[in-house]
Image 1: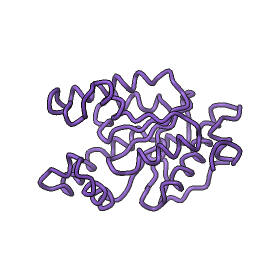
Image 2 (image 1 turned 120 degrees about the vertical axis):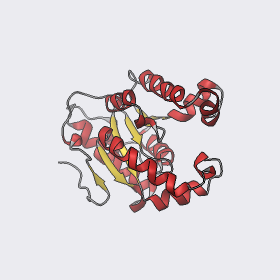
Image 3 (image 1 turned 90 degrees about the horizontal axis):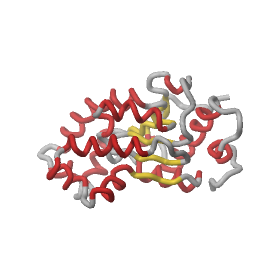
Image 4 (image 1 turned 30 degrees about the vertical axis):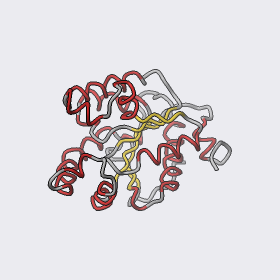
Length: 215
């Protein structure tokens, strides 16, 4: 039976979590706004499951030899979004990955088409105030340099929330949970999701049931 979820913390945004149109690779894809815990939770999932952790932003920076802020300055946002699309496409044939995406990845239609094909898509969401507090504690984030950071957060969320909902199989509100609790919830729901498309036991379910790498 499916894992028990509290509607206040987890939900299937559009019902897509209840059906699987075609088998997906055994990957977990994390989407969501900046400072919602994608990197931290992704690393926890990687450790618990023994899957490779892939941070899309960091990988693009390595490929280009420069920070994303520099890519934006020298080549523009559209060029960066194309880099995101190309990188996501490069993951299509791989499995046993924990994929952490950039906050703006859903802004481009090709990316929204690719993301659900890569695996189980989890939308990490938290309160605007939590995002603001985390962002303001990191002076390296471009958002800190804007005239009205909270106003920018609200404006971006208004645009992006429907797009996260479009691609996600489930939404998890991370401000109600610890990072470890969030990771455990993702593992349990991912086990249920993937068990519907394959009869054999998979590594995610082994950890969910307490018999795998998880501690």
